[in-house]
Length: 506
Image 1 (spheres, rainbow, N blue to C red):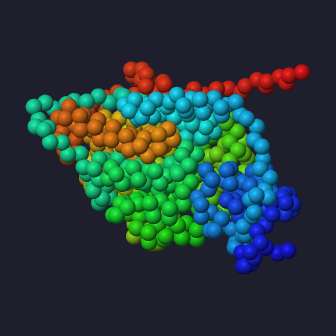
Image 2 (cartoon, rainbow, N blue to C red):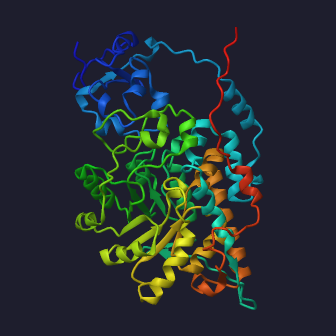
Image 3 (cartoon, rainbow, N blue to C red):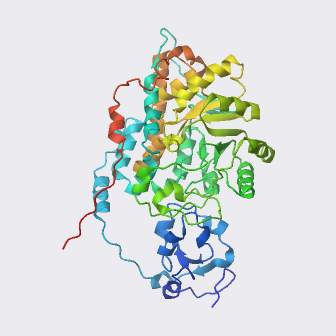
C-alpha cells in the first residue's frame, strides 16, 4: 500500500504497520501522531543514521522535539515521504525504566530556591546546574578542552578596575543607546545560543519575549530549537532581531536563509567566523548525548561520530572553506548590515573595516572553540587604541561577548569603546530554571545594577563612559592574580576524567 501525502484516506495508519518498517532498508518514524518514511534521509541526517534507527518503527517525538525546529520535516523531507496520520491508540507505548538520576533531579526541582532568591546572573547558573537534565547542562555549560578560555572570559573583567568621577550630577541616569541604528534600553543584546528547547520546552521564544519586554535586541541562532519564522512571529510590534549565520557549504541554502531573514525584517547579519570546525567540548562528549542533531540547515553528509557530543552532531553543514574572499558575495545578496562574529585580533578588525562590513563582535565563542583564545574584553583593549590612532573608531561598530555577568562588565566594555555586549548563557540558565519570569528577572537585575553602577562611577549617560574611567594595566598579563570569585565556584562544573566501570552484581 502506497501512503503518500496526496492520499485522502480517512483510515489512519496502525502502529503495527509502522512497526514493520524498522530497518535501514525501510525506516519509518512517528512524530506527533504522523508517520514519515525517512529511509532515503538516513545518510543525510546531520546527527547520523544511528539515532534515527534507534526509533525506527516507533514514536520518536520526545527525542525529536528539543533539537528540531517544528518546520524541519516540512522543509527538508519531500512531501511524498509524509505518510499520514497514525492511530496512536494502536502504537505500543514503550515502558521506560525508572531512572534514579531523573528521580533525584525531580526531587531537587521540588527544593529549588524561589526566583526572588536569585540576586545576580550567577545565581541562575547555580540553580540551573542542579535542576537541568544532565545532557542539557553538559551542552550549555561546556567549553573547549581544559575550559581555560571559558573561565578567563569571566575572570578577565576582574583585572579591570574603575577610576570613578565624583561630584557628578547622577540624579537622572540614562543608559539607553543605539546598536546598528536601533534604540535599546540598555547596551546588551541576547546573543545566539543553540538548542534552547534542551533547557525549556518552549525554547528561544522565551528569549524573544524577554527581549521585547526590556527593549533589547535578540540575535536569532542558526541552530535554534525553534524555527526562524517562529521566532520572528513571536516578536511584537517593531521589535528588532538580528540573525546569526553559520555559513553552509551549499551557498544556495545560505543565500536562501539570508534573503528570507531580510524579507522578514532582520536588521543585522552576524556571520560566525570562529567556527570552521566546532571545538572539542569534552563535558558534552562525556554526557553521551543521545539526541538528534538540529536540522535548521539541510545538509548532505555522512554519519557523524556521536561520541563527539551534541556540538559535532549539529554542525556537519558548516563550511570550513569560508574566507575573506566570500565577503563581497554576502554584500551582494543583502542590504542588511554585515558583522563578523568571532574576530580575535586587531589586524582582522582593520581588515574587516577595509572589507566594508558594518561591525565585528570580538568573541571566542563563549570559550567553546579554541582554548587559550583571549577574552573579548582583552582584545577590545588592544583594538580600540589602534583604531583611534588611525582615525578608524567611527568606521565600524565594535561589540564583545563572553563572560559578561554583571553590569560592571558592560560598563567596562563601553568605557573601552564597545557599542554593546552580547549575553548568552545567563539567559539560557535563567530560562532553564525559571522560564520567562527567570529571563525577565535576569534582565531587570542587569538594569538595576546598571543604574547603580553608572551613578557610582560618575556617569549620567552612556556618552560619559570613556577610557579614563578604567584602569586596564593588569589586563594583558596572563599571570595576574585576581580575587577568588566565589559565586562562579558555585556554578562551575569541574572537568573530570574517565570513570571506572561499575562491576555487575552477581
